Image (cartoon, rainbow, N blue to C red; front, top):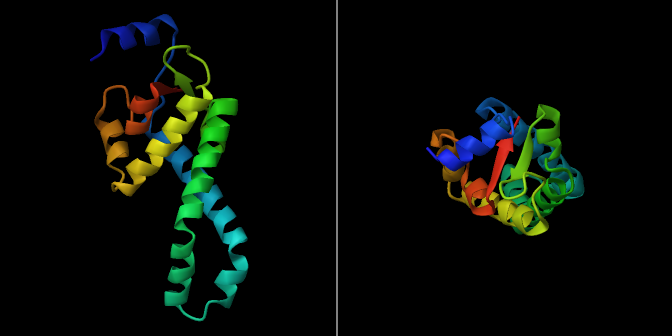
Length: 148
């Protein structure tokens, strides 16, 4: 355990966001972004004649989808300290050094490492479930914490 972090949480009367709320926020964000992708690619999806063509269309836009996810995460975490899913779950991302919304650099770092974690079979999220402070890889690299 990290005594400095324990003291910070106690002094500022902050509670760590429960894993259940973080998971729900994750699924809300993924649902919103997937819906956005479907809207953007609607014409291509409708014109696909088979499941194989649908998969090909989806695979052609993987990099664009990653860019959308990075932009979404960076903007909302920087601007509001939370994505729409986190806002709905009443949880917030705080930069440890300032205890306020993360800087643009920290928000971008966090967004990029979320994608890396997803590409590595969500191992960064598993790490967060096992960490006493529920810090995922993207929280650790950006020096952030998610509170309730």
